[in-house]
Image (tube, rainbow, N blue to C red; front, side, top):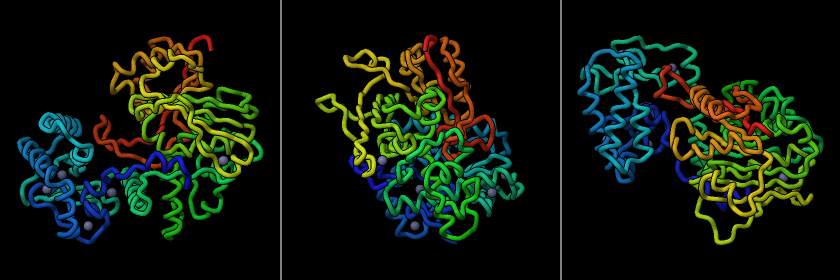
Length: 456
Ligand SMILES: [Zn+2]
Ligand SMILES: [Zn+2]
Ligand SMILES: [Zn+2]
Ligand SMILES: [Zn+2]
Ligand SMILES: [Zn+2]
């Protein structure tokens, strides 16, 4: 966990604004819960525990953001003050965000998040500026994420509340963890490399993996098979929180291993594995240590060669040599190695450089190629559909997965494994507020599929 390469790359230094803060459940600055919070009187979109926290945020950011939010309130207040459908709510919010981006070309992700996750009544879909002045939104007393206006029922479906409670619990843990470590992620590998190969495919899920394949059984004594704390005991809550947070990074290593097992019947005897990560960026760079898990679960593996290719990578250093990544003491003593090569640009260009070697497996995590930067992705996707090696794709939700597989199908890709829910998707649900279906949420690497050129 405490490893060179996670430090060298610099762990991320800011936490994405928690939904709990945007929904007025915690102070916007110190991110703690209090019996009462005071809203900024100008925008009413952020709440603070004290004048001190308000002042800190004002100087840090809110001086600028307050104006942006007040403009959004004005736009919201110009819309009808009557109950609307989810569909109408979505399109209004969409217009609000389009207007916000047009007026604030230098918008920040944090500002956009405040607009995106604004509180609204779960039944009539009105946000605060659309309510009569005496009517106020009140949060659900159980999850603190859903809200209700005074005219509507003060309840929402139990299953939705349960997911929101999980989001609240995961965010609360992530905040504490960030305040202690300055990291918004955690890496929890198998401590000691396994001496015998136990296929990951034999594990029924995360709990089974952590207990039987990894070595975290003692962490799981008070954690349920759904990876929730079994009791309210602080240790149980913390351990479940830690493992749930770590699933976000472990998901990368396990999803890759599951694909390697699916493609190579001899994976347990291979001595080297070459992986190319396409579209790699901060999530991969910040979590390099998590790939050590492949060495720890594949006892015969001696060398793991990672290549990251993507537009968002840092500028290349002068010499194009593979960096040696540090391994744990046991792997180092056994002369096992991990290396990393970085290449800034598109994969379809990378394959043309001198010295290109095809990978055993290419990995394209969360490209979202059907949604964003379609033009930039197209040549790479066309290359991969005919590539002489398999490619693992993951997506956040079903819609992206369906769009992507339709595109790949259309250009003649061969599906080695059809799209399916990924057993090794992350455990923390993330709220999706712009989907056609109300109350949607997604997970890291929720869907996965494997593609290869026709002749591989
Ligand atoms: Zn505070
Ligand atoms: Zn304000
Ligand atoms: Zn309402
Ligand atoms: Zn609730
Ligand atoms: Zn190791």
